[in-house]
Amino acid sequence: MTKLQLAEGDTARSLAEHGRFADLLVVGQDDTENPPIIEPYSLPQKVVMASGMPVLVIPVGPIPTSVGQRILVAWDGSSEAARAVHDSLPLLRQAGQISL
Image (cartoon, rainbow, N blue to C red):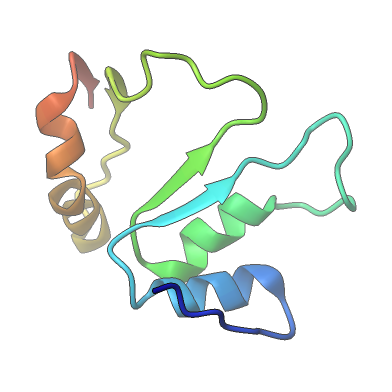
């Protein structure tokens, strides 16, 4: 059974706060051709930075069948990067190519 929750205020902040209770956050990419408003950071970028949890961003348009086959890992040696790689191990194990 799905539980409906209502949140008020900043969308990215609300998603990030609720997402801390989940294993993975799934958000849609901003429509670059029709952005809702002009801001320095997109909703997915804000959620990634504020949540501290793994975030999967679904692109606008058709999803290619090769999703997850080529993965890029941004690594800076920090504890946050180590946690992100650890959290993504199930996806990394299934990838055909990983670039670090």
